[in-house]
Image (cartoon, rainbow, N blue to C red):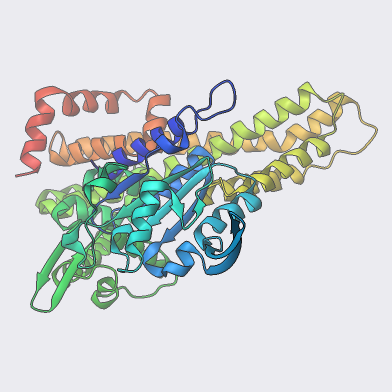
Length: 490
């Protein structure tokens, strides 16, 4: 299965394993909660989805790369303890608590979360001395004589033997006690993730043209050459920051992330072209409905790679507008909910006391580590705006509410501006696409990629845009879709 399917499978498992009966007992007992074992090539996102799942399910996460551990840190240090059996005293060996088990209890103490995921990465690449411990862990959910606490689900991950010479095969006894999930690299699934994470549009444009470069692992005379999903994402973050700092991107820099000479050289060449297209085509003018006739003439003479690059530049401009609209809508809706709660309880609670409750809840969620980075930033910003409201004492309920409502009215105007801008831009973009490409392959790419972005899809579902609907019906349904997609892949 692909990484998206694996994520869904794990989330379903979390839901099932943490379901309790009327007596507060887990319906699937701890002994029957099989650990999940993800096996797949490196760099496809096995580790990353664990953090996503934990935050989405609002549970804890303790993560370890087991190859960094010795037997002592995993099992605990031995010590001598005396026990009496049938009137005689014996010295026996006990173990201190495993560092890994201790980390779970520490996480519960820090966050207040009593349930979570214990994620062990590279589990099939452990040293010879640690291998029996890992087998015992998967089979019995213990490290030494310490059990994984109830309510904590075990997920382990490893690489297939062709990617790592240190891999140890699991025996049938172990495999019969786990849920084995084979994960494969899939560019089209990763693209949806990349769009949601706003990865650099150059990378998405390049991979749109050359999806075969997405994941490559080869052995050459110079050793192992590889390109992974992790490499593309990390490179995206670097390029974005380098551009803000006006720093140069070259092949050597790219190769530090994409360890393949041919791919690194190709990406550098495409990056230079992409920047050139970005400067020459006036994307923001197109979105504003101000298209120079020379733009159409140039596109008519351009090769397919250049035309696709322009389409992706156009999409990137639209995605930024949809993202801004979605953010402003979140601020407006959340602000409205706060004011509604304040108005409904205005005679029993002050504005500041209600705000203090929200601040306490924010700090609790922050401490529990159940908010994503974006959620932290957005909630913090909104709380800062709410904190700027100053309501003098002695006012009537209506007067107090009207003061509290003033900045919200300004926020509604900001949302309306963002909505109008996005709506005008998508219509201008669609008109440009019709004039420049009509029903060609470029339009297929444009419509399908619009649908892949969650914020774009939400905006399009909330607004009636006949031109978009017509193209979606014509290009994405039935035999026409199959024919065009078949042309694109050959």
